[in-house]
Image (cartoon, rainbow, N blue to C red):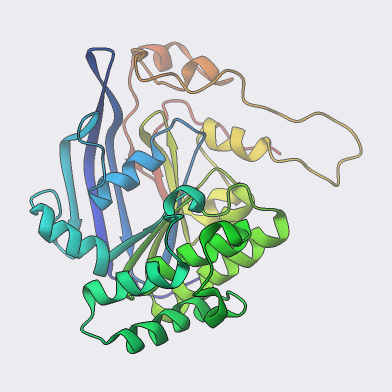
Length: 329
């Protein structure tokens, strides 16, 4: 893991996002604060429905305006507020400064264009280069993403590539303009374990070479252990714990984090069952008066059901919990 001093690139402060559904507004991101620094990988983890992806989309300025919007807080890039930028200014930031790899390359890659056309369009839109120069840059981007036969693949269409190859193309598209920040939203979903490892290694290599700040969104704690410097755990629209990857895995303090780690299968155990967290993430229409994890928590006490916990600093990070308990494996 990186142990160097980091420069802050993206800072999210008290971010609030609401969605419009069935004639009402529901808050789905509830005061999230998080930073992304240069030369660092931050993993944002949690179950589906916790608000991870919509937080990332807000940083990119890609929230669907008809159903979702930022209702509070700030998002800064190098000290400049992104929420105050015009659409044109935000497009420049999104293309040249902050880039994103989306979950499903099948829906992100236009099926009627070749891989070469997609890459060269991105490059020529933001760099003053000739067609031949753009092609060489496209080949280089694919090679750096470790796509075999990169020059040959320029003539391929997305459907002609395997899932792992398409994800490498997404990495090439996202990093072709050398952004300072890369957001990767579940980049290894639906890939087999071997290909997952290759994709993660490709991402980590690019991040280290270019000293990028990276926000990696995942629910896979094995991925977190392999690549993260720092981890933020998200539950029901809130950060409930944040720490370095070593501190979080060695001594998780929030019951939700403990539950996630406890649910990892142990192949060394002779017998026993998986320790699944009971229940599910509450829908945004349901907001308990106290801690939102209390209905699923084995350590909840009366005050957990009445008081909403505040995210407070600890000796190793941050924690949102009224009744933390020691972790036992």
